[in-house]
Length: 327
Length: 285
Image 1: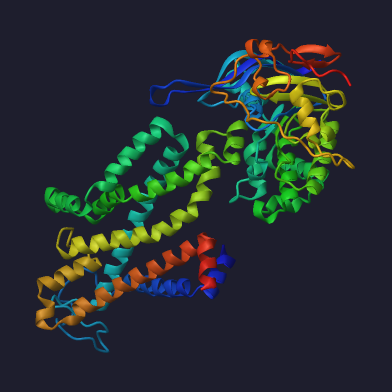
Image 2 (image 1 turned 30 degrees about the horizontal axis):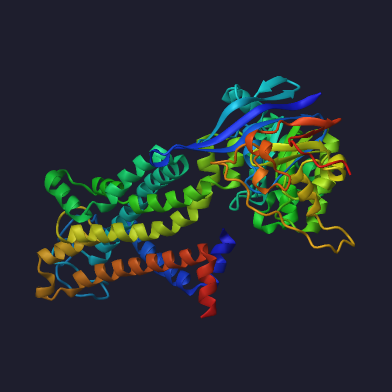
C-alpha cells in the first residue's frame, strides 16, 4: 500500500519580469509512488528538478513556483490527504507529526544564535501535544537513541561538530515519529566517515519507526547504500525508476547508464568519459526527449516525441525509445 | 552574559574606558535624587561663586548650585537619549523585520516610507515644530518626535539582515513546521538582530543627545526643564563667558563630552565584539 502517490505533477516557476513571461518547467509530468516503510531515492544532477519536486510534494511552494497540474496524495492513518487541495489547517496538522522535512543544507536548520533546545520547542513542541517537561523528556530519550547526550540541548549549534549537528537535525525531524520523512541532500556537506554514520542512523531510525523516506541526493554511492527503490530525474522528468539493485545492475536509460558508469570501482583503471553538453535549460527545454541533445542513441523520434515512462520489467519503468539492451 | 561582560572588561580597553566614563556620568546623575534644592529654584545660594570647597562646581548667575543643577540636567539628558533610542529601536525593529521578512509590496511600501524619512532634513523640521508648538513643546514631546525621525537608518540595516535570514533553512523549517509569522520574527529573527541593534543604540543615544543639546542651546526646546543644552542656553543668556563665569559652561560641556566618548567607545567595542573579523584584524596589527 503506497503512502505517497504523485500523479502527473507539473510545477513551474512562472515569472513576468519586465512584462516578459517566463516559465521554468522544473517539474514536468512526474508520477511516482512510495510504499510504506521503504526508502525511495531520488537522483539526478543539479537543476534536474529534485528539490522543486519534493518542495511541491511537501506543499512548501511559494511564488513564483506554481503547481500547474497533477495530484499529490498522502495516505496517513488519519485518512488520505491531497496536498494541493488541503487547507492550511489540515496541512499544519500533518506536518511534523506525520510528514517531516529535512531541508537542503540541513547544517543550518539550527538557528546559530539560539540553543538547540529552542529548535525542538519551536519546531516540534506544538505537534506532540505534550506538556513541556514531558516533551523535553521525550526529546532527551530520542536524542539518546541517536547517541547524543542530553547536554546538547543546552549547546549552541556552533559548539557541536558537523556530525552531531546532523544528528540533531535528524532527531528534530524524527522526534514526532512521522510516517513520512522527506530528506533533501542531508549528507552532502559531510565527509565520508560521518556520512556513513549518518546514513546508518537514518536507516536505523527508519526501521524503528517504520516510516517511509523520500531521500534526495545527487550522490549515487549514497543511493546504492541506502535506497530500496530509485528514481532518476533528468530535466524535470522522471526518466527511470526501479529497485536499486536492478537499476545499478541493468540500467536501461542511457542517462542512468552514464550516471552509474561514472562511479569509480575498485581495480577499474579505465578512464571515465564525461557526458558532453550541459543540462537542459528548463525555461526553453529541448523538444521531445529532454536528453536527446546529449544522448548517443538519439534518433528523429526522440527529437519529435516525448517518450512515456513505461514498464520494462517488474517494477522497472523507463522513459526511453531506445533503452540499453540487458547486458 | 555576565562572564562576557567581565571578559570584555578585562580584555578590551575601549570597553573598560567606556564603561568607566558612563558609570561616572550615570552615578553623577543619580545624585540628583539627593539634591537639597529642586532644580528650578533660583537664588538659593549666592550667585557667581567660582568652584570652591563649599560649591564644588561653583554657582550660576541665577543663584543655583551648579553641582546639583548639573546632576538634574545630565539625568534628564541621559533619560532623553535612552527614551529616544528605545522608542526608535522599537519602530526600527518592527519595520525592518516585517519589511525584510515579507518582501514584495510590503517591503517596497515600508522602504519607500523609510527612504522618505532618511532624506528629510531633521534640524529644520525640529525647529519648525518648535515654532508651531511654541509653549506646548515639552521634553516628552521632543523625545517622541525624535524617536519618530530617528528609526530609518536602523530599519534599513535590520531589513538587510532580515532579508538574508528569510532564506535560511531555519526560517523555512519554521514555516514548514507551522510557526506563525509573528513567532518566526520574535523567536528566530529577533535574537539574531539584537546584538546589531544593541550597538546602534549607543550611536542613536549619542545622536539624540547631540541634537537635543543643539536645539536647546539655540532655545528651540522647553527651556524650563534642565538639560545640558538648556544649561548652556541660560549661561549664554547671562553672557557667562563675557562675565567670566566660565564654570557655568565648562562643567556641562565636560559632562556631555564624557557621555559622548563613553557611548562611542562602547559602541565601537560592541561592534568589534559582534563582528569577530574586526577583532582578528586588530590582533594582527
